[in-house]
Length: 118
Image 1 (tube, rainbow, N blue to C red):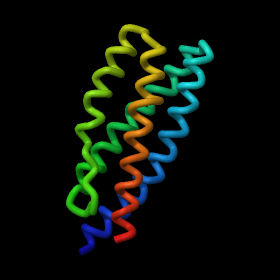
Image 2 (cartoon, helix red, strand yellow; image 1 turned 120 degrees about the horizontal axis):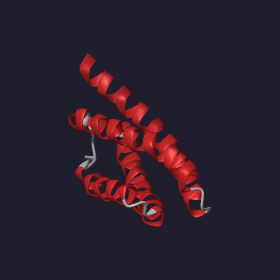
Image 3 (tube, helix red, strand yellow; image 1 turned 180 degrees about the vertical axis):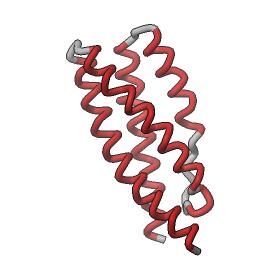
Image 4 (tube, rainbow, N blue to C red; image 1 turned 90 degrees about the horizontal axis):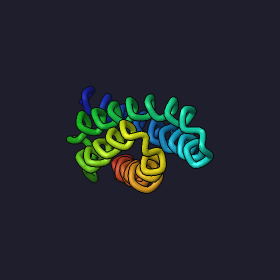
C-alpha cells in the first residue's frame, strides 16, 4: 500500500512537471521563432533532461495508472529532436516541441488525472 501511495504522489508531481514543461517549451519555441536560437537552446537542454525524468516516472508508475501512459511515443520525437539540435535546424526543433511533444505531454496529463478521478 505504501508503495502505491508513493507512486500516486509521483504521478501528482508528474502533473506539475508537465505544466512546467509545457510552459518552458512555449518559452523556448517563442525564442526560436524570434531568431534567438542560443537562448532557446539554453532552455531546451534542461527540458530534455526533465522529459527523460518524466518518462522514467511514467514507467515506474505504470501499474497504478488507470489509463496507461505510453512512454514510447516520445522516443521517436526525442531522436528527431537530437538530430535537429545537432543539425542546428531550429525551425524543426521548435515545431517538434510545439506540435509533437507538447500535445503528447497534455495527453499524458489527462491520462494521469483519470487515475485520481477513479
